[in-house]
Length: 367
Ligand SMILES: NC(=O)c1ccc[n+]([C@@H]2O[C@H](COP(=O)([O-])OP(=O)(O)OC[C@H]3O[C@@H](n4cnc5c(N)ncnc54)[C@H](O)[C@@H]3O)[C@@H](O)[C@H]2O)c1
Ligand SMILES: O=C(O)C(=O)C[C@@H](O)[C@H](O)[C@H](O)COP(=O)(O)O
Ligand SMILES: [Zn+2]
Image (cartoon, rainbow, N blue to C red; front, top):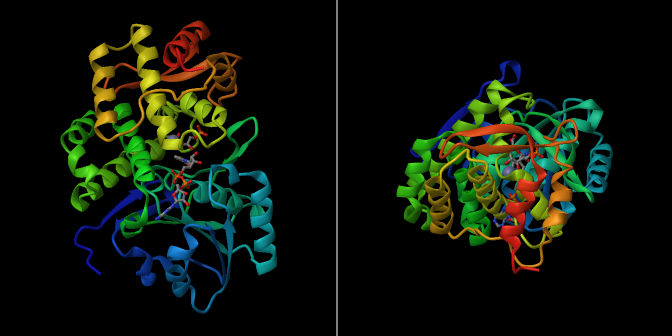
């Protein structure tokens, strides 16, 4: 295996620090990741799509341990409290002790649920992330946000629980469908839009290479986004302040995902539309210039991400869902807005009438 193009980024959190390893073939580099397991038990949590492709390679690295697997049905609709209960039962059946390790093998749905399961078992055991989607490599596997959805909304239950290591084998992306790949690009664009104007310009220049999944450009983009996110997380692990910036577009995006019953839009697609709506709202509030919104829309289109709200969404229902967002305080909307490329801002007390106006514009003629 060649390591020439691999990268390591550290998430600096004192005693909870961990490496994010990015490279091709890392799932088979057992010596590397096995060293992060401390005990004698391991539970691989994956799903029915990913397990047939990659579980065997991970299992080969668990020789000598007592291990088993727990497989979810595929899809966001299965990121539920009920499935956490079943995963905990699987740990009990395994006889997992406090030094056991949960291995999350899959995309963000698997990673969020597996991390939360690890946070709950015996009040918290180790877990490692083996992300297999672009989105999970650049975002969900890093930073320790774990959790599940409720019928009332996205990620309403969860815990901050950092992994021991992130093993991002980019070879797994070879089997990732195109739509899922593009959803991952949305979270890279989001990061650049929030706080890395140079990365934004680089993305504009390398959109064609990224569309072609050119490996050098891809590793560079993944590493840049992970580095950016790791920096924010290191400063504000539990979102007391500026980590909330990473939520740009998510109040809109999560409402769209929930209202669409997790079938109309993928998370990354909700984020793409959401960051554009946040940009439009910022422009409406006189915070940013139309030229920046246009640049954002152009980049999203250049990588074939959606820029419009699909048919059938009701603006009033979207606003009602946005009222349940975790960032809100004192009964008012608290949103991440921006001043232009690379300059996001937390804004409390956003006027609902302005939000509704943006939602009505975006859904006009759609119902
Ligand atoms: N914790 C965080 O900080 C954070 C950050 C961003 C997103 N998220 C969460 O992550 C989730 C979205 O993650 P996602 O986009 O990875 O979705 P996902 O986990 O649903 O995976 C996307 C699809 O790709 C399939 N898949 C995964 N790896 C594959 C591979 N290598 N080859 C072929 N198919 C593969 C999956 O089975 C699934 O059908 C959402 O629940 C979102 O809320 C969390
Ligand atoms: O890591 C973070 O912080 C983020 O907000 C990253 C988001 O991309 C991600 O979708 C996260 O799951 C959203 O979390 P939530 O707190 O809005 O539920
Ligand atoms: Zn996200």
